[in-house]
Length: 75
Image (cartoon, rainbow, N blue to C red; front, side, top):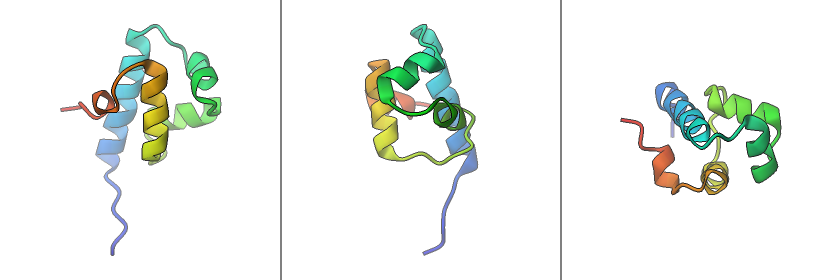
């Protein structure tokens, strides 16, 4: 099976996380505290530099107090 990576989708998910985080007045540092991820990891996810796992998406959604589907509501 060929390795599939949709960079446009990854970027949109990252931007959606930023949008949700800012709408709740949560800093990246707060998100680090709530998820246990590193600041650099949060930044790379938000900038679309890494194709993060579903488990990480779930942890971020939980920290933002939104259903995970909200993170994927990008179009």
